[in-house]
Amino acid sequence: MQKTIKGKAHVFGPNIDTDQIYPGRYLELTRPEDIAAHALEGADPNFMRGMAPGDIVVSERNFGCGSSREHAAIALKHAQVGAVVAESFARIFFRNAINLGVPLMVVPGIASKVFPGDELEVDLAEGKVQNLTKKEMYRGEQLADHVLEILAHGGIKPIFRKRLSREL
Amino acid sequence: MRWLHALEKILSRAAGKKEVRAGEIVNAKVDLAEVNDLYLQVISSFCEMGGTKVWDPEKVAFVLDHYAPAPSIKSAANQKKMREFVWEQGIPHLFDINAGVCHQVMPEAGLVWPGMLLVATDSHTTTHGAFGAFGTGVGATDLATILISGELWFRVPEVIKIRLEGELQPGTMAKDVVLYLISELGTDGAVYKAIEYTGPTVAAMSVAERMVICNMAVEMGAKTSYIRPDKKTLVYIKKHSKRDPVVFDTDPAYQYSDYHSFDVSNLEPQVALPHSVDKSVPISAAPAVKANQCFIGTCTGGRVEDFAIAAKILAGKRIHSQTRLVVIPASQQVLLECMKLGYIQSLIEAGATISTPGCGPCLGAHEGVLAPGEVCVSASNRNFPGRMGSTEASIYLTSPATVAATALAGVLTDPRAVL
Ligand code: SF4
Image (cartoon, rainbow over all chains, first blue to last red; front, side, top):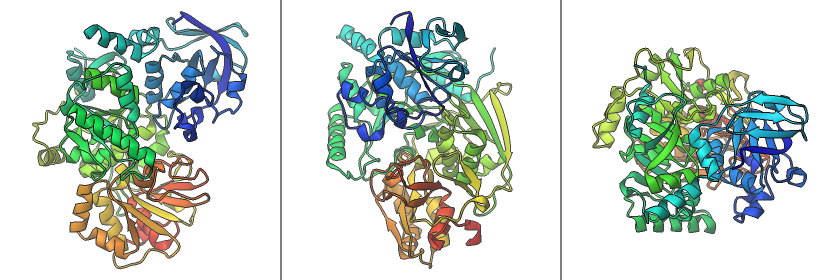
């Protein structure tokens, strides 16, 4: 995991549920690139056309609420979203994203300060976001060391794979 | 010394630590990990990570409830793979398609007890707070890591205390209480936090009623919920399990992160309007919509008490000719009990469609999904667009009593008028 993540902001409203992040009608898809093609389609059908790898999803409160489907986090991961920065996250989505190695940060009030297209730099270890376009800095909540470590390994699966191969 | 909540004591025990504090992340040993039939992904993640043997088969349960019995070739194939995994791993707790909804089946089977840490691939695992258990829902990969290691990382939650006082009016049920609480506190009122229910109203509630308010705590975003076990809880536990329950006490000076108090003595039956669980209004303020389907069932509204009041309202009568009433007991035991008590007979004679125990149409899989433009008045717990079938259908969430009264009249009806 890089220390900071730089990308263009895509701004969303409150309560973006997992159905908007990954519509249920695509649940039978299994290839990561096919899943990624529908990332955030329910909230913005043009999202994938306008995004570049490393771009940052910014949202109001309760991002990832609703069904606990892991496809939502899988879609964002393989769409190569750099990080998701929201005013708050629904708990199961938060865990799924961390487990898959998708960086997240809680930043109070961020959605009203950032405009779509602003260049952002997210510093996970420090718990802050720089808005390079507006020359502003927003303080977020620092992730726990345990969570940072999972992200540093690219998710929980590589950690377990390593652990189990060592035990063998 | 710091003052601890009972939930913190549960996590301390499970983490093997003297004390844990809110906000801290701990690795805790899980007492029971449950997987339902929506989550074949658990097995894929398990294999992907190199898992070969489940850490402790005795502490694992598989419940085939969402697609029971299988409505499609795909769900049949998923269930087939799950059964094969269960048999291969020597997991003793397989609840197949004849058992019922996991949150009803597990306590009945004696797998839930006060002070335990229970993790399942289902958000409504908060239900088990009714037994003084720490129950919480996770995704597939999390559950797979438990199957390998027996542990999971947890952020120790802050606790919100909700005190309820006042006697409920006849015709007003636990479901009405929790719908009202959700409308007051919002769908993100308790994100990352635990909700503890206390007060005389809670003390007067049956175990089944407590399960209802704990079940829907997750609709406020709660990670878990909790009711201090009392005599009623212990009687239930004794009846269903061989365990000697240990009840952890919350220290008297424990600091709750928030406190709310509600008097429910004048509470009217509530209706959560489409398409959000927090859009509740008293039934007197709800529109008299025509109900195409009425549904009594699920882990929220499918217990013996729920069919008792429905049978009371409908016995010797006929449901309206332009509606249909789908009745699905939450478990086989509930079904048997309701048959013994004559409720099922009364409901069938009143015109109900009875289906086999399980989730039924609750998440739109089968057994009564909705057509575009249809309205369902439901005793279940979620009314998001498309939850029970077509995205152009509307779901009104109410108590089982209100569903029964509505089935009788064909339009959304206050059960107090027919009781
Ligand atoms: S009954 Fe409904 S809410 Fe309960 S576990 Fe089944 S699908 Fe989920």
